[in-house]
Image (cartoon, rainbow, N blue to C red; front, side, top):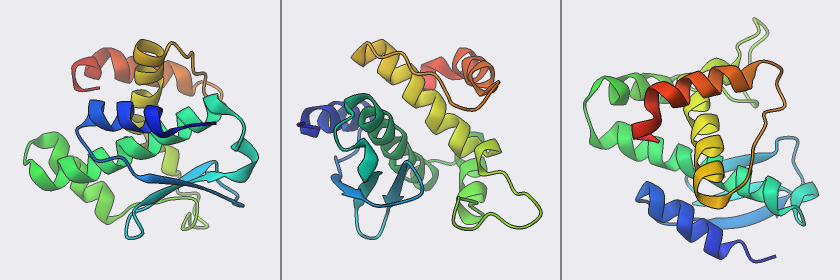
Length: 147
């Protein structure tokens, strides 16, 4: 399965450089390794184009968010800088129940994934978390010009 054309299309849409894709044994579906400059996708999705597309689109959006937060100084960039400095992910969720999916960065990445894959790749994406698609749809309706 050749993911490079998809990687290039998503990167072009976001105005970023494509990153290498590696398949790894992991608990998460995917993860962005910033310093190493690659996206890791769970090995169980190695032959699943739709799941790979979701992972690539989601993680590339995080690259865009980092770029945006560091290049601009509007309200969104300032909010994202704060979240990036206090980022909660699956490796550092605390015992008080910090919920990384409630962060704007995650909502934006999930929303971009759903919007981009539907509009440009003709893929319908449904989130696995009950009720989250309604939140994503609202975010898209408010921010569609930014996605």
